[in-house]
Length: 371
Length: 212
Image (cartoon, rainbow over all chains, first blue to last red; front, top):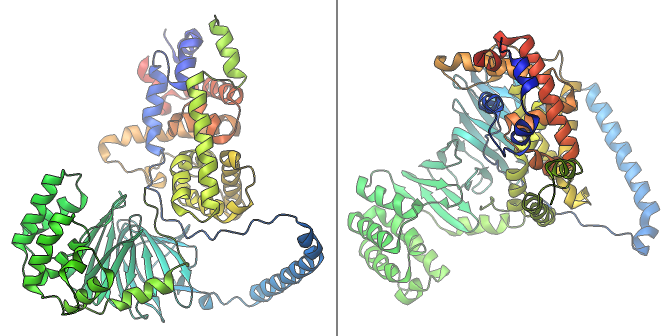
């Protein structure tokens, strides 16, 4: 009788050995079957957004540092003692609700914080810095932080709380959907996604990230900034903007724009088109644009080539004439102050809010990896 | 001209065929560049390291903790690595260093957690995304994974990297810092033991029975 044992004993070791070692030689059906069955446990998560890396100064034992060593050692012992005492005091009087974090409420189903499963009947829970909240397909939860705002977490979502600094509250949305209502000052609430950083500029918005890392933000109040390594989009209420890994934020648009307009914009932003196709898509966008689509046209100024920029300038001028201080020549060479002045004519909000945030944020975080 | 036996000996001694060896040597050189860049604050470089090593970390963890916990712990490992990156001096040994962190994270998990979750046939416990049509295959996969998990740690880690994560022997060696010889021995002995387990309970582990 042909049993597995017989086959295992009779199998020429070199043949199966090569396949087991480096998949060379004749494939071994038994190992292939095991690979196929066990492959479902394989790692398949997309690259998460990692927190900023603060480079540490690399110390060398130069003589003056060696002379400082006793003082440093004493200081380290003192700090360690303070940490131990603090820990012991804290352990004696635990007050978890006073720790930095977001309160978890409106729990439905069985969302998890790390390995802890929450339930609706449970008392107050808190998402602390470094912790992960995950909802399955049947779960929901809300997060609230008195000084920042409220986040509704939809089913099948995974997010992490990265920081709760006084000037910057930061979470990472790995996948799923959140609805945010932010009352913190503009620029203080930031969401990292796998393909862009979302910056609240005083608003309410919905942010969705799919399993591929692609994202979509829809603003319902105020406006949102979307950023990836210098590629920026501003999304006012009623508008939406998609983002894709390796590309970053696309061009924002109002959701009531025509289907042709949106389709052409998506191709322009994310498809690997020829210059001719891109020019064709820009022509569709320009011909379908309405007055309020000035939002999209303003963003396109910096994304099209020199020839198309003239066409975009002319069309945008028909909808919103540039202020007297802005020249066509300046816009065509993408003079930033002139672009800002024209943006401020569009009637959304003063772009200096964004630049103020950019300046204050510079140095505290590095951009999302661009692959 | 080398005979096949000679080739085997070379492999066991950690000296793989030229192209493979060159490929991983160039990867190590890339690792050194990325680690240095990440140490200087470059998150994109750390992202590259994640892309390259996530499967290895996942496999090392899967060999030690329940399936449902692995994804979270993979993130823990990389966050821990990110925080400690400045302490890494032998940048060419990033893989071995990361594997050690992964094993420590798995050990921490066991120290923290109350009774260890057994690997059961209950698909819901294993977070398998599959409809009823593939329930049998899921059951079989879980049973085989349970058989792998019953092997000694050395064998199960290497086998999981090969059979679950789809890494080749040379790749396992390059990523974990083990020698080719060790990986080869672990694969062969582990596979022998796994076959014995599958023969002992054929109704659960499937493949052997299916072929007879």
